[in-house]
Image (cartoon, rainbow, N blue to C red; front, side, top):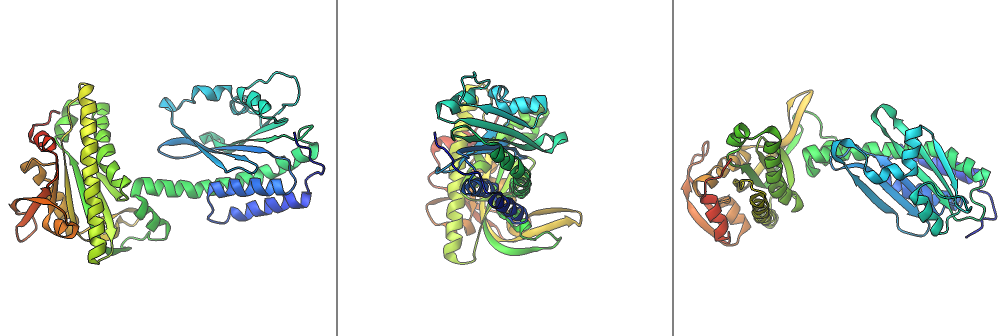
Length: 417
């Protein structure tokens, strides 16, 4: 165990509090706040060897995130997924944090350098690792919403924390909570906008593109996807089974577009709209189209895996269509002054939607326009010339030449609801 010869300097601890208050006014991430505050507290003379902080968050995937700081080591991040019905996972009930919340107390201290049996498994682990003292705390942001910060300070100092050190840790807790909450609010805003608008659109809104009519014209490769026979599914299946089918489709197809760096701008009923924005140069357009094609091929492979899994579960295979197009789109805000939609609009988007309907006629999972294939390059199979509603001249449509025959055969089969 280490021994600290000096008490922490009140002036230096106050400087850490000043730094935290300054961060509350800056656009700084939560991880940077945690790392910076722990480093500065250790430098101020506080004998912290391990710090754990956990925050409840508003996120579609996670109920909480956490960080563990150890002196001289890389900050570790932890994500805690949602549990069914909003319950806590079983392991949480055996933690000091659950004890704090259950008994509505702010702090819990446990001397680890004694022979007293430890009440919680984590304390046995810390004792084995050579820690001498443990101080846990709970700080609520909004009790009605169960929002807040849980944390603990641990030391390996002989004799544990001194009274002055505990006082310093208690004093820093409030400015730490304020700075972390402000960083979280910024993170929630970014996460919410990214979740509901897409990364690119969300960043534009945060940058100030918020008024009706704000927007710009840009070039983009467009992916329009649609689930077949969804109306019949909605009529015949229960609500949850229908939603599960939609999510299976979106996970495989829209998920592949997002994984390739595309922006998913809208889920429209049983379909989705994704784009790969690019500059107007031929090289940039080719790169965007190739990324869109790669995403469509990955989506087709993922749908194959999804349908194999579904059939093993005695569920019907899902039919779908993906259209690939490229053109100029208006990227911006439309709607009511108090209720806006941020998306892309224009003739190229409408053409992509109408192009997708041809996947049924040609029994192919992927179809592309001539403008897309010309910019993308590669091997394509011409399917014929077709008239699209609202487009003056017929256009030649294509499908990728390397679509596996099994996928084409599956597309010809009627899909069960």
